[in-house]
Amino acid sequence: MYKNLQRWTRISLVIVYLVIAAGATVRMTGSGMGCPDWPKCFGYYIPPTQAEQLEWKPNTTYQKGNVIIDNERLLIASEKFTSNQRFDPSFWEPYTKHDYAIFDAKHTWIEFINRLLGALSGLAILILFGYSLKWWRKKPIIFIFSLLSLVGILFQAWLGKTVVDSNLLPLKISLHMLMALLLIGFLLVVRVASKSFGLSKLPPRKIRVLLYVTFILTLIQIVLGIQVRQFVDIQIDRWGYDLPQFWLAAPKLNFYIHRSLSILVIVANALLYFKVLKAQIERIFIQRILWLIGAEVLLGIAMFYLDFPFATQPLHLVLATLLFGVQLYWILRINLHRYDLSL
Image (cartoon, rainbow, N blue to C red; front, top):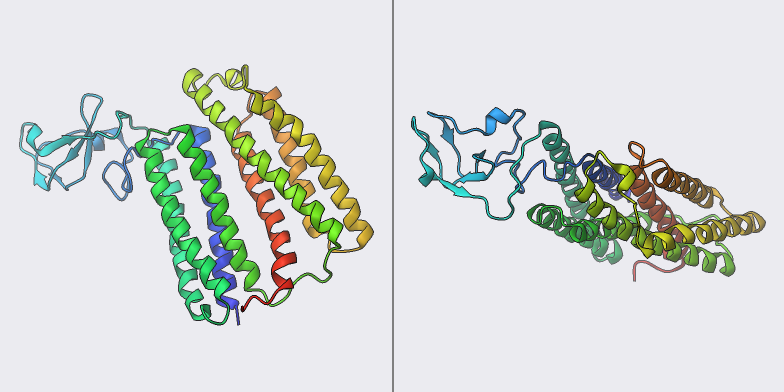
């Protein structure tokens, strides 16, 4: 009955997580401005591979919106035309949203792949929304959250544009990340609501309360982590990518709170694990949660004491979103099937 919904919800979730991983890779490699315009990349649907492709050339047909780099500035073709033997500035307009005018093929294609995955996630969610239309009366929660997912991915695309236009303002990057978490939440509701079964045994009230507490702690940690990442982004802009030993030099108070609170997170989830064992209920969720927390702690230690080894920062981010997803999925499995979702 729910086969298509479940398939496309699963596909959408996988792609959204891939987008998060790609976005983290973009930031790790400094590729955020690899495509300085949006939604195209240097004015093309398929970006260039060599700097020479962005140089002005005589006897060349340019489409409206094509970009060239001229004297360390971006120029955009104001209309379709064929160039003469000499450069005519009347056909070109300066790009005014920012002054970033550097081409690096590696950065460009990393950012382009990130955008391509974003487009695929939008397509998958659009298909999911199409399948949800038949459920708008029978089970409106499926239709409502599929619609919210579609609106969310469109808003996320707009946020991506503002991130590029702002030349990677850290606050806007953080909002982009928070919106990704909200989108995961919408899709998980659809995922759980389209299942015809719940948990084999409902956890006792004390376990449910402790689960909610640990989930709130995770949310607090994610918010603090985002603030720390904003600080790191500022430090990267100051020191560059070649001096990671300075990225956490003299961190702010939120870093120390984030680090110390991880102890409480470990203790609370360990307590939850023992209570799950005692109650003899499904252990798969808490086991995954503990593995993710353990990996998060190790990555945090590596970043601070080993000066951000390769890929630790994006892995830390991706695992945090996976932890959020597992906890929320468990909560939804407990609660959504306690009620009649068709109402």
